[in-house]
Length: 334
Image: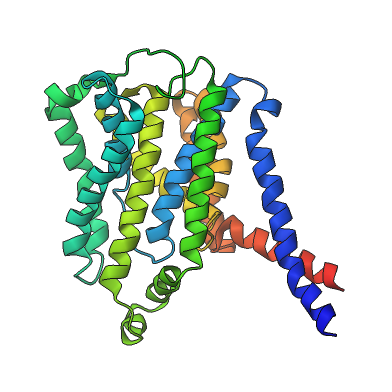
């Protein structure tokens, strides 16, 4: 009996491990079955923007601390890489830790006062980051190139410059980063920090009575989140080889990070990636195939998907997959 129960308990773990191994194999062999370079570039966007959404979800999803300005950290990463390669003529790999430090400093400036207050002060504070950041980037022309932006010069192809003749090598860089971010998200989700975040999300008052230091918990998570988004932005800037204020601090990108998490499932550490895999191709297809008044159909599709999920599946597509997996496990055990 004990052996039978042990085997039944081990089955979900084994099946989950097999599933994730298959997923990783599918990700890293993507260049073999994607039709063209455009599809590979689309896969790079899924990896980088999906990673940024996972970073946002650590705080916005796990603890329900909605940030409307996380794209500021993304933009800091983009500009830091561009400045390092244009003005300073230094490696983009040196720019990444600098971008992380700058983003952590901004995160502390925003989180320190707003997390000490109740209500939606954090959401309002992060919302104010966007216009301020864009104004600084537009006005500081000597450093950022102003409204014209910065174009990264063409350098020798290779990992050291993060420039390649083909998109495949950059895809592998972004895929490795995605795997690292997924690992961080999973560790946080099932750690003591994750349990504290869940308590804050469920009932902030009860969490405080249970001894959860909400300020420290939120600040620690914000710092992790900001660092992830900054690195994603740095890699994105290196991929585009161009940055301007509207690209770096776009309101649409902020909304996309939130939408990916909502559609995929806020409570799942892999949920934002699922949302990115679905919504990014939809958006790109709409942009390419639809023009003029029809272009609004892409945004309409976004809104329709979100509305249907909120009504019929508040846990997102991740909730559907989890229910299907649990049903499959139940049948397999019989």
